[in-house]
Image 1 (cartoon, rainbow, N blue to C red):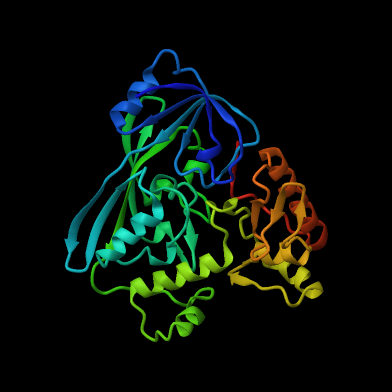
Image 2 (cartoon, helix red, strand yellow):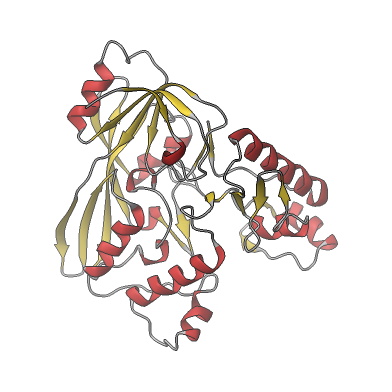
Length: 339
């Protein structure tokens, strides 16, 4: 294990922002992680843990220690005739992990196919797509307490999952690092979710009436590839903003002015698609300098020229937030972590 100085992070964040870390290290075991955290030369430095770098925007160089978690490994435990407990280390690529589960015919994660990032960051924001969230199959995660350097186990209740939210983004932020995540998946009688978004119509295109979990995954992959740019081709972090959830009373007022606004009611709250709001404000495909809103999905901000700074991207996102607030009275919240 080597600690490197003035380390370039351009290839370690999916926006491709050209910044550097004062110190950088890659760890492959919990023992290595504890060792580096006890190091007298680094123990007082600001810390940043990197997974796949897919949900982060660097607006400046990081004046501290960046640790990339390269913890690898997947294990399986049969629970009963229809359920299996699958554990994955934090450094496993999320999409590859989902595909591993599908090759074993383990169901529950298929709607989360092709989401960028690593397994370790999935509970942090309770990643979700097409009617499914991490919390639906999550059992527990092992974490390292950064105060006492002891390993603890967080169950679902302790994680306090919300919409793109968890304890790790709230009062637990900066206090723990996730080492491993455990999921309870089905092995035989799967519950197939095709009722959200465009999955049903995509399956119809494929002439599939009774889809398997593998076919649902294929449909999700097709949809995502048709709408979302590949970070390897053009820098981005996927959905930049959360879909806002507003009080019913506020929604009814806005709806009077914009009756065509898509909406997803939930009791006294209504979720509104951020992409639609942004598009209505004229941002879809719009470019300012090195930054643009993607031409197929307004929710995605891209490093259009490959030369954008994090500051440029952040300022572009602020302009979007301001214009949506002016037009609809709805304030968007960034989903991406800003450093």
